[in-house]
Image 1 (cartoon, rainbow, N blue to C red):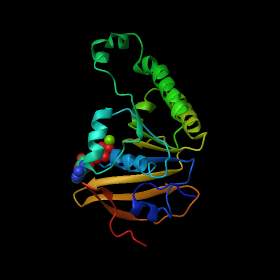
Image 2: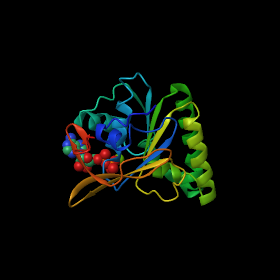
Image 3: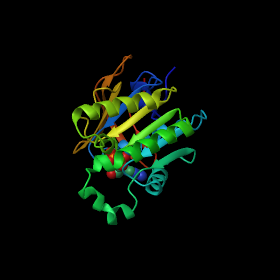
Length: 220
Ligand SMILES: Nc1ncnc2c1ncn2[C@@H]1O[C@H](COP(=O)(O)OP(=O)(O)O)[C@@H](O)[C@H]1O
Ligand SMILES: [Mg+2]
C-alpha cells in the first residue's frame, strides 16, 4: 500500500508513492515549490476521504487558501492550523528581553500542535516552515529530541508526515528526502533518500503552472 503524493509523475518515480506512516522532507530554497508540493499531498487525501492537516509556521491560512486555488488545487477539506504570529505579538515582544524566543514559544506551540493532531486524527500531515519548529529548541541535543518525539507523535496513529524546510541540516531522522531546485535551467525534482523502497534516480525536470506541479516525461 502506497500513499499518493498527489503528483502523478512523482508517484511513478517513487514506484507508487510514499510509504504510509513514514516521515518525508521536502527541501529547497524559498520559491522552489515546497508549499505547493505540500498542498498537492494534502489535496490528494480528499478523494479517499482521508483527513488532511496543514500546520503552517510560515504563511497565514488566508494566503495558503488563495495560493492553492491559483494552482488549481481544492483544499476545502483540509484543516489548517495557522501558527503564524498574531499582529499583537509584535507590540508585546518585550517578553523576549527576558526569555529566549525558544522558551517563550515552545510550550504553547507544541501543545497546540499536539491538541490539533489528537482532535483531527489526520491521515496526512504537512508541516510548512519546519525550520521555525526546530528553532524552538535551544541546543542540538534538545533539538534532536524535540524533532524525534514530534515525528513519533505525529505518525503514531498511521499518519504519513511531510515536512518542508529551507535548511535540512540535522534532519537525518526522516525516511525520505525530496529535493526541489529552481535555477536558470528551470525547475527540477530529485529523490536523495527513500528508505524501504526503490525509486527512479536522477534529476527530473518539473513545472509549476495554473495546474500545479507537473513532472513531464516521467511516464513509465
Ligand atoms: N499559478 C502559478 N503559475 C505559475 N507559477 C506559479 C503559480 N503559483 C505559484 N507559482 C510558482 O511557484 C512558486 C511558489 O512556490 P512555493 O510553493 O511557495 O515555494 P516555497 O514554499 O518553496 O517557497 C512561486 O514563486 C511561483 O514561481
Ligand atoms: Mg513555502
